[in-house]
Amino acid sequence: MNAILAAPRTLPLVAVLLGASSVLGFAPFVWFPLPILSLALLFNLLRDATPRQAFIAGWGYGLGLFLAGVSWIYVSLATFGGMPMPLALLATLLFCAVVALYPALGLWLGTRLTKPGWWRMAIALPAGWALLEWVRGWFLGGFPWLALGYSQVPHSPLLGYAPLFGVYGVGLLAALSAGALIVPKPRALALLAAVWLGGWMLNGVSWTRPSGELLKVTLLQGNVAQEMKFRPEMLERTLLDYGRAVLASDARLIVLPETALPVLRSQLSPDYLDMLGEHARRNGGDVVLGIPESEGDDRYFNSVISVGSSPEGRYRKAHLVPFGEFLPPGFAWVLRVLSIPMSDFSRGAVDQPPLEAAGQRLAVNICYEDAFGEERIAAARDATLLINVSNDAWFGASLAPRQHLQIGAMRSLEAGRWQLRANNTGYTAIIDDTGRVRDLLPPFTQGSLDAKVQGRVGMTPYLRWGNWPALALMLLLLGLAWRGGWRRHP
Image (cartoon, rainbow, N blue to C red; front, side, top):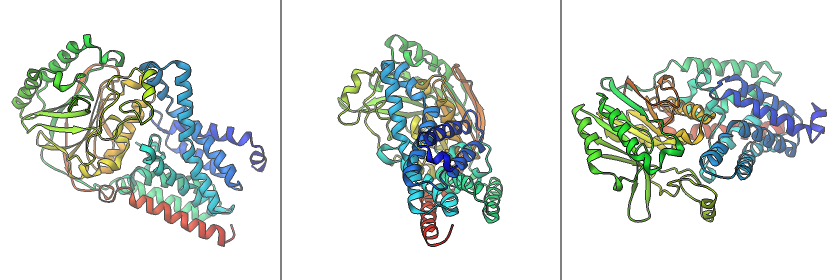
């Protein structure tokens, strides 16, 4: 081990390989023990490391993780964004290199706070890792993709803690498990066993309760190719296909994907929405659909509206995707190398309430927003169902759509709510309150997903407190590690 640490060129390479291997713990592979084992090996490498060595190892691990796990960024930039291949490759590499700084800083912090010994491996490194994952989830807009806790969906016993501590709490417990595996102390292994047994027992706890009767729903998957979606000659066919699919459903709630109608509402014939609304009223329910809206001459919103029996509702996307839906100041030149339609939206309000539709209260989010669980907690508290509408066609047949579905399952676990996911090319799916995917449509197919779902009410501890308990535990553990790691012998 010391020989590896003494070779500056070897340590980053080993870390890169460990990080890349951990991707197999995430969807679609879901080998959930693998990220824990890879972290355990990484922590063991840092047993006697300096803070500088820990930073390099953490950066290498993060680079391997993100290059292997979010390579779909290249697909969206080059294949569908029109960016030249060399520039898209460079942009993807630079993005992954920057995001890899978070695990680097987390492991640097863990080694900076402690001397070599079991305090470092069992507590400081796991807590530092988890704290910087939380920071990654919000700093500069955040990029929470591939947070460690998601790798535990759908099979890990640690998911019993998701309704209590959320994804970052599950990630902390997974990291602590990695640390415990390499500490040769019976107490550490006993605590590890207790944590996993506790999670397994918590999996049987229902934090929320059913509300009302089963609701018949239809989710539509239009499967409109991304390169065709916004072409004017495709508009009539898209409207016709979705109109026919809506009229063929007798469900009380019908959900269409993000920007299913790829035209500004002000440019759409009112007769079309009137037709959808009239059909929904005959079913005694509502249609929920994605459509961009304008307000004035220079404000555009990525919106979801509901039409039918209930008063018309609206949700406007609040957490926009940089360079895909808005341009950060100083980056207007990006438009010269990207051909992304509707790439300058305005943000919706952060405190939008649930939509009232089909006798339910719907906590809506749009596409990438469901990676930011805490941002829609207020709406989820008052909701009976979660709704996500997406267009993952941007990422082709990459890992992204399955990873996105895995993220959605965590949101259902945290909130104790069923979730309806309508996606343009897939995965259109229904997830129950335990995070289990009840049914889904095959990707890249056009179809309707019909099912009966159960509205639920009540609050999980996560809905009540958000990420604060997990954050407090991370800071407490870092404090204990600093005190124990410097004042006691290893």
